[in-house]
Image (cartoon, rainbow, N blue to C red; front, side, top):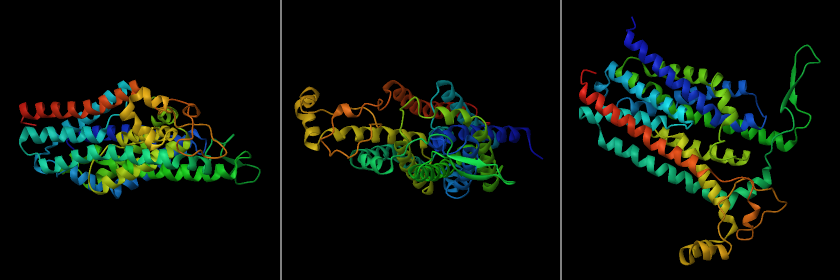
Length: 395
């Protein structure tokens, strides 16, 4: 028979998964829905399936880390597990009120670490290993995308030319007994290739989101032994799917608007790099933030794109002459990723700063608010968890 406290824990875990599905679906399939390649209903279905697949395979390693390696499983009483899940849910609520996606993984680890410090059971070696990757992963994401933006992005944009299709991507021929799907009348060969890429990469992003985020919803209850690994993954996968089919419909429309107006190609590059990085960390059992890595990818890609206006020697002159002197030599214009497509790709140093003016790279105020909340929510979770378990040891 289920106890009332366990029922509360399962409901809170489902709430966490529900919110993960609502936010991650927009990140994964926003480009596909925005470019009219697929419907919101299809995006929700693919998100549900691939998130569950990611949690069922790679995500088990992260559940093991968070459910018994940061703090021994003996300390995950049912009450403590519910309290930790409450802190995670509270972080999601705060981030939603501010309109900023909080790092659920970092918040969950912070809450578990607070329990460990309060009880003297924290494995500092494991915690140090996790935190070191929290520092390395964003830097790696930035520089990988910076190199792509400086050396590869214009060529990829020239070769693929991914644009929105005019009209529906897939239409149904209802002239027969059985409706037959076919590409829209205005869909070109490039649109088809781009559509396949957008859907494939969206599925990969959903897989990565499931691999890294399933643990955030179920690790405390798994550590307590209240649920098995398979039961937890199915619970989290179902909750993520529910969020994908409901609240994700809004995030699919608005994803990315506060940070930057990304072209489809730029969004796909960000998704591939960030998803690959988080999937790799999940395989190693490291709980890491997909949102943090994706945002650093956006900033790195735009920075690299902007630096094509100068050569390395011109950029180095900034350190010698200062910004004013460097501007006289050509300068580095921190502007957009969405330059107008040209017939030929200009070489590095030949492109004029004024040619990259479609939109700003990112809003400094919005980005500052995001970074502040990324630091604030795990810190608050850790401090609140420590105080709770330090002065309420019966939990």
